[in-house]
Amino acid sequence: MQIFKRAALLVSIVGSAALLSACVSSDRYGYLENQFTEIQKQNQTMAAQNSADRAEISAIKQQMASDEQHIRRLQDAIKYTVNSDLLFPSGSWKMSAGGEQLIAKLAPQLAPYQQQKIVVNGYTDNAKVGAALRKDGVKTNEELSQKRADAVMAYLVSKGVNKDLVSAHGYGESDPIAPNDTAQGRSENRRVEIQLAE
Image (cartoon, rainbow, N blue to C red; front, side):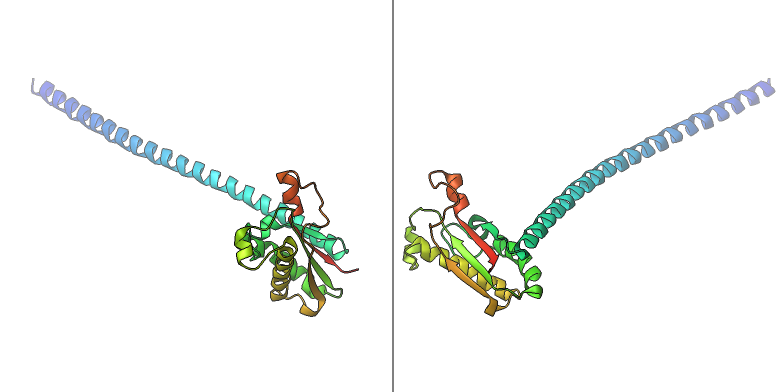
C-alpha cells in the first residue's frame, strides 16, 4: 500500500513538472512569436524605406543625366532654356532658392572651360505688368525680362563664371515660342535662355 502511495506521489510530481514545463514553453513560444512578428514589421518598414530611397536615387540620376545633356548642348553652342516660373516667384525678378539651385548646376560646368562669351536672354509672356511690379519701378515686360536676365547673370558670376565674358539682355514679350492665348503657351514664353555667343 505504501508503495502505491509513493508511486502515486511520484506520478503526481512528474505530471506537475511536465505541466509546469509545458506552461513555460508556451509562454516562451508566445514571447518568441511576438519578437518574430516585431522583427518582420521592422523588416517591412526598412524594405519600404529602401524602395523609396532607390526611387529617389533613380530620379536624381535621371535629373543629373538630363542636366548633363543640357550642359553638353550648351557647350556645343545650343541654348539652354529654363522656364522663368522655375527661377522666379510670380511678379518678381529675385531668384527663388529652387531657381538658384537650377542655375548653380550650370555654373561649375561652364566656368572652368569658359572661352566664349555667355549670353543670358530674358523673355516674358504678353500679360501686362502688375501693380506690384509697377510700384517697384518696373513698367514694361522688357524691363522685367531685363531684370530677370540680370539676376541670372549675377548668380552665374557669383558661382565662378567670368563677369567679363557674360552679358544679359531682356526682350520682353518679343519672340514668343508659343501662342500667348493659352496658359500653357504663356508659361512657355516666360523663359530665360542661356547660350554661348557665336
